[in-house]
Length: 336
Ligand code: KG4
Ligand code: ZN
Image 1: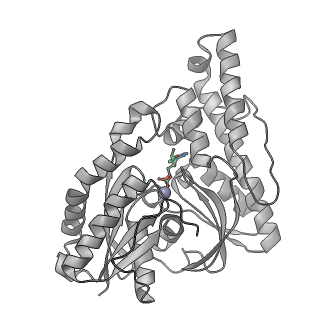
Image 2: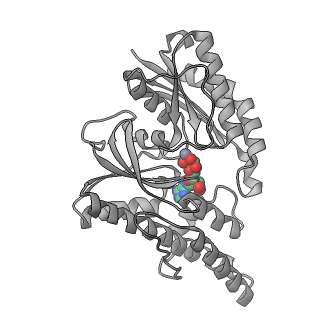
Image 3: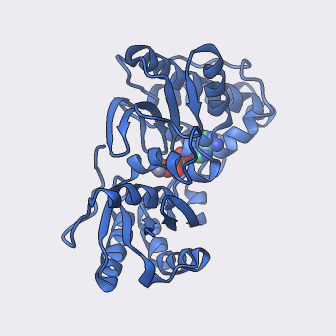
């Protein structure tokens, strides 16, 4: 039996999970409500909350999995990328526990883990086969990744400024919705007309993205609407959300389709927090109809930040004896 304890603390979720031979036994996530009122994650508050949460979260993950800490084979933790103060909590805790239990320590790249979330509870035929393309869309990243093997990946396109999740969250802030606004825009969009308003399509070269111009266009669109009618947002919230979501999703799809054409790869996956977005998921399913591709959508519970994805990455690294040492440190920036 290979039992991997995964620990995630890169942003505002403290999470611990146990993966046994690739199967998820527990995945405990403590969200931090404290950021809601600030319209974004406050790093100092995030690291303090991680410090408070980490022991009970790990304890709950072991109990739920019915695994005693002495049965663990290794500890996998998020080394980066992310907020330095947050990463340090998970990194230090993992180093201490691995030393105490005298078991190997495995460093995990958070973006690689989002992609490998597809292999949690791997079922033949329901997981992508190599090579596949993965559109990784989160609060901090937007990348098109060519995945050659579990641990061999290359970024072939990425955002030159804001991430797709940021584009959702910043628009939500303009609409005075609490953080994180992505899921709220998604739910309002379900009631709205995506053709009601149009936003500029911002194009950058190759397989790259840019979302900062869209965000600025959105700000001026709302300001203009309020100038004409102070109840503009209230009266049009669903249509505004549907149209803006559509603008983000279609931008994401254009480059993904270009990547499919350029590489000839027909196994397509999405990952990261924004992969929970229903507009994006539906568009991918449509892509399956219009292009000769097979699409893989991650289960909702593994889209946003969680430790099961860290543990599954740890599992594949464990199989390759890919361990790190006690001298490891957290890295706020760490490319795939
Ligand atoms: O992967 P994640 O949990 O954290 C990072 O690694 O950044 O992604 C969080 C991002 C946030 O920007 C959040 O608003 C967005 O994912 N998100 C969504 C949805 N669920 C989460 N965006 C749009 N629609 C959703 N349903
Ligand atoms: Zn993430």
